[in-house]
Amino acid sequence: MKIHEFQAKSLLRDYGIPVPKGAVADTVREAIQIADDIGYPVVVKAQIHAGGRGKGGGIKLAANRDELEAAARSILGMKLKTPQTRPEGQHVHRVLIEEAMSPARELYLGITLDRKVGQVVVMASEAGGMEIEEVAAASPEKILRAHVDPTIGFLSFQGRDLGFRMGLPWEQVRQVADLIGRLVRLFEEKDCSLAEINPLVVTHDGRVLALDAKITFDDNALFRHPEIRAMRDLDEEDPLEVKASETGVAYVKLDGFVGCMVNGAGLAMATMDVIKLVGGAPANFLDVGAASADRVASAFRVILSDPDVKSILVNIFGGIARGDTIATGIIEAVREVGLNLPLVVRLDGTRAEEGKRMLAESGLPIIVATDLLDGARKAVEAARR
Image 1: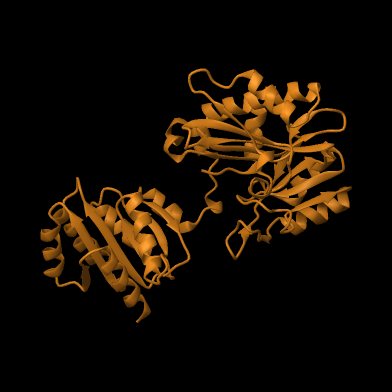
Image 2: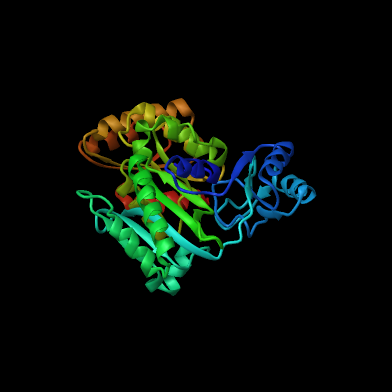
């Protein structure tokens, strides 16, 4: 789950990590009040779940009240387009008003899980303020790493070592080491999947603080954090993904034309690959999980809500759920939903033959495939008729 920058900075404050003075505003009047309280100059920052806001005109500097009012009016309500938003852009509902900073140095700090090592990794770089992926590609030696041993935690000498390797003087090294320790504690206690500060700035008077922040959380651990769940902003999420999550179906909207319904994330990835292999394009990633009739019906409703879908490929491997049980769910769901698109079903695994026979004898216009490749070909062909 993603949160806004102002919410991330609220968490940073809770853990004692310095951030600029500021507050969020829903209206121009609120923005003026906040800026008057902080003092000029200030920065007006659009709050959406995407990076690259400055390039799209979503971050503006205001030296006085007139400029602040003009900036807030232009950003609030705009459709902000960045390389990370949907093509139509993202509606801006609120802005963050912050004191303007003129940093002496910009650094990068990020914490995530290193799945190869199986440990949390702290990444730091002297090349802050840039896209860290570009830095990693062009100058990988500038990305410093320190892993967190789960048995002993993050040690203060690791923070000092990162600070020295970024070329900081002793006074900032102590601040950076302390800040990293606090961010690691936040990451672990809140079950984050990413905690990133970019840029982490050093001011001209020697302070170190987080100028921008991005924090995402492990969805599977949200049941432990009602205070984090309360930060969820449904306006920032795809409506179909919200609808799917309410029914327990894992769904991600893609830009293709073949709707996919699969049980198991690995099988879903393989299905999308084979659709691409035969010249098609998947319209979604959908893992229906345990394929009961109710879940299958819910999944059909989500897929059919996407106007880009021209055919549907159901690729189910019967394991714990038997093939005949799955076939029953598909037949009931198709009759309930009233399917009006070509439907191709590939069924394998336990009692798959019984399931195929049930689909063939159902009287419904279901195209039964012999294997995944056959199913993908039939779904792509049906979509293009």
